[in-house]
Length: 425
Image (tube, rainbow, N blue to C red):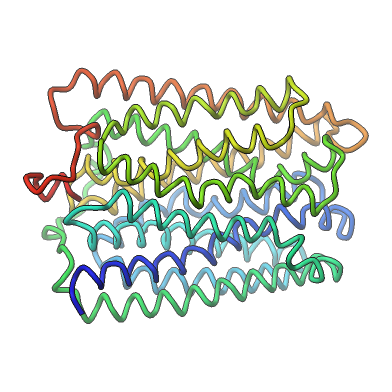
């Protein structure tokens, strides 16, 4: 099999692996009301289920990135997918509460390493060009997983009528399928390792490796952390409850409304990835994407516009930023440090996710948010809007820095045959 064909097979397997993982991460929001009504969970307890997902990765994400650089992306993918499956099963068992929390913690530990490993693997296989498009397609499949989780309140409605547990068993099954596809990727990568780019010789890790990145990298890092701290806690934990309590719609309707973001991203993300590959202007694209986030929350709080407006804006933002930010990061660091760089980003991102999830739940409880007091959600939305504004400032600073640089950087076009291997990476 030729290298060109193999890299697309690897992309397909990586995409299927991450799709099940994203479904399982987003499986909490559709059952949030069931957990509240059937098990008496508070909003802080519901928020903790996604906050604890991120907790182990605060200290361990960087360890996972370094480990990937040492043992290889494919081997790390296989181990992480197995850990995700165990965590998803424990979450589905889910009673007592401590078992469910433990399952989410194990799932989070495996998922972040899985995510980084697959991104590093794609960077290796698409070293000769098309990296932004490949990663965008990868994220499109991830969005299909999130979209399927939100719309499962309709297409798998029978599982929800049987209580909180069957939807979680469905998620565990999809995670197990990801383990199978991850194993297939491992076998291909092991058999055809000579066809992908090899990283530079592994060097002994030192703490200075965590700080020896350029300023543009740090702007991208903080954008990623802040964006994730807004998007995922809202869309994957609290949005469906918010739509039900504030907009007065049913669980199925709220799930469909929430899914519009992911549905738009399925198609839009590859478009922005292709644009980034063809014309560059990555800092400009990131600035546009970041500007839409605070606007989304302003519309939710200050207007009575249809939900499709805010979900469309957030969907565009969610399409631009992941499609551009990861290949841009790979361009800014040495090949042998890509895993470490991704791990550092995910370590800080995990801290942001944990704090933001728990903080949003705390605010909702403190202001008695619910169907009888829809205004109680305003504090949570204000927190998300403020974080969005800070993320926009980070992208504006990145764009200013890129415009002042003399060539290169992430704004450069990287599709010509004259590009260096590092630029194509």
